[in-house]
Length: 393
Image (cartoon, rainbow, N blue to C red; front, top):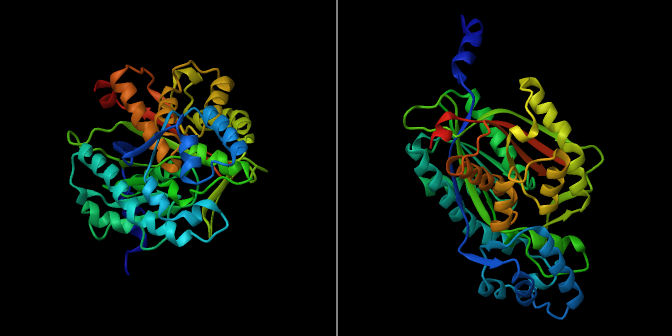
């Protein structure tokens, strides 16, 4: 085509947004069923018909007490679990198809609940959303949750969809990083990020593997949604956090520390206690690399913090290594205490809690950081900037 190549640079320029991507709205949702962490060991061994395993139960009580969680939500009920007794008792029994059927039925509804809240807070019609990014460690089917959300939310049929599956806890941070890139490279784009997790995908009775007990002591169910966009349309849109930069780092030789795997028995994984020291030892180089180009000269206590709270030991290690003030990780600790670890959805709950702290409790920090941790071992880092609109609310 005559003149085409010479206009390519101009076309690319006009397609890109002029400003940085920002978080425009947040929504979260949990199932109605919940169990306190104090009651959970008795509940877990009762519903899995494992009360005779007293040594395992004592170990499980110790782990549950060390996690830092007081309450967790679950999609499944005792009645539902009793409908499938075989796959609960032995992890080696084939159960993946049954688990995926349960997730396929329940996950879109929970995801839609969080997304509807975000869209309502955003203030624009759902048909204005141009991109959809869905993250889950609970499902591996196509068409999947993303397609269901199109109809449940009334999204446009030509929306650009991306699914992130089975990537571990840091996928919420990865999904937000992807949303940042989509928003900044497509002028006018509005990206809906939805993370939804249901632990029924890997729920089973206790066995001789310590990882099984650790995982069941940690994880609960939830969904989080975020709308991301650049070049904010005032006064309808009210940006909360500008997404300044994002990066991802793999720590060499740590593949054995954390993992997620889907097999015939469902979703399984491993969580090593080495994780606590790994985070503490590697967090500062990642932060220095992220903030170095900004030439801010800020101290770590000058920032606000949105950290994925995998377990209390991770947060304690970061506190100690960076010598943070007691309130700096309050948003992460609050989410861990009240909801547990919800895989990819957890970081969205932390962002929402941080928003409340800034709006209601007067958190004064202007610059901050979001951190996610996942298999690899991987650290996701995003530099955030609290907007004037957020501080004025």
